[in-house]
Image (cartoon, rainbow, N blue to C red):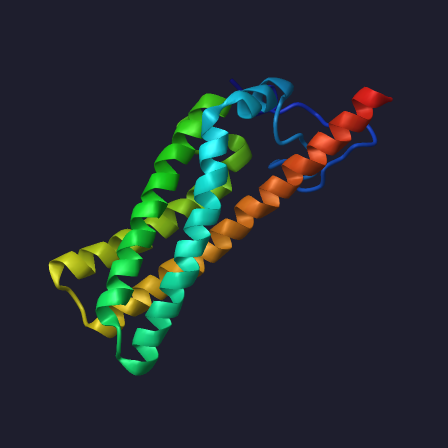
Length: 182
C-alpha cells in the first residue's frame, strides 16, 4: 500500500493542520476504516488506561529519582520506581504495537505514528540502558539516576507527541462529524 492509499484527504474546509506527514499536504490522521477499527478495538481502551497509569508512575518515580540525586537518600526506592516505570513502559509499548497492527495493519512505524514510534524507540533504549546498568552493576548510582532522568525527558517529549496526535484525532473527528451533519 502506498502512503497516499493509507490516509484519506480531509474534506474541504475541515483541514487538520499537522495531521499529515507529507510537506505541504494536510491529511486525515485516520481513514474511515482505520477510525472504525480504532473505535472497536479493545486495545484502544487498554492504551487509554495504561497511558495515565504510566504518567502517575512517572511522576512518583521522578520525585524519588530527584530526591536520590539531591540528597543521596532513597536509592532503593528510586531504583524500584524506575524498574516499575520501565515495566509499565514495556507493557504500553507492546500493547501499543498490537493496537497499531489492529488499526493500521503494521506492528510499528505506521505512517500516521511514524515519528512517535521512532522517538518511542529512544525512550525504550534509555530505559533499557538503565536496567542494564542496574542489573549489571555498571556505572555509579548518580550515573544510573542521570540515565533515568534522560529516559524521563525523552518520555515527556514522546508523551507530548502522542497528546498532540490525540488532539489531531479529536479535531479530525469533530470536522468529520460536521461534514456528515451538513
